[in-house]
Length: 258
Image (cartoon, rainbow, N blue to C red; front, side, top):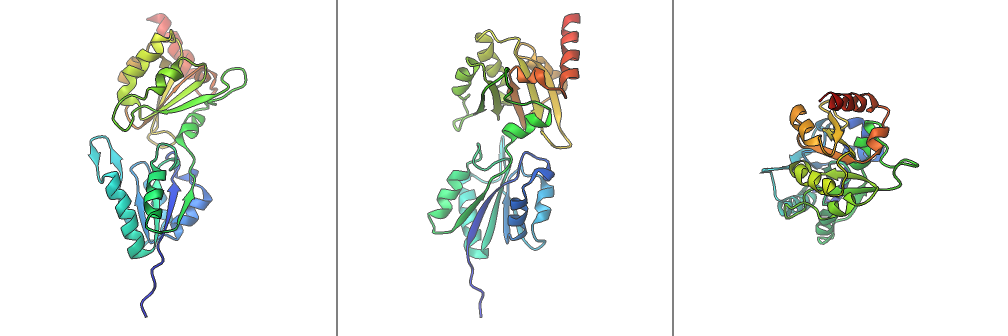
């Protein structure tokens, strides 16, 4: 007798990069997967939690190199669920924070396939925290903005100009290719002295950190050869980090010498 296929799709957040930051619920979901479709930002070590015989399909998207379009990914999820049953869609960070998770869920459910969402630890808070940056702090910052630097039409988000006018911490994802424009917006608000941290490959062994001010961060990025994927944190909370305090004081002393 042929085994009845029971399609199911679980959308799993892989966290910010460190495989130890995967949730227990995500580990359990991977252990039951027949197929795993995973992103470029999902650490390969996380795939070890899936059964050895599970099919693994890379569907990551990087600038200038898309393995699949979003429409193709949506169809792959459905096709594999109908063919093999239990599919885990593994996405970096949290699938509902700049992850297009809602689009994938809507498409899958339009075929009557049941879905489950396993939230992930978002890099928006986890990556700054790994460097001792508390994106809110009593008496320093009472709120924060989380913004994508590059919109779906490849333009700079208009929300950044609004964020630059506020006293809140600003956390920008996918903004390295728009960094000069971001700097311009903050300079227009007379915030050239605002502390900035750029954290590349946060929480991983390849992590690199650049510390500076709005007026100097472009030079820091060039000197330290920082690039994507990276998170940009702008705000006084950067100065408050105990972990980065030494770096920041050293940076300021070098600026005085210059």
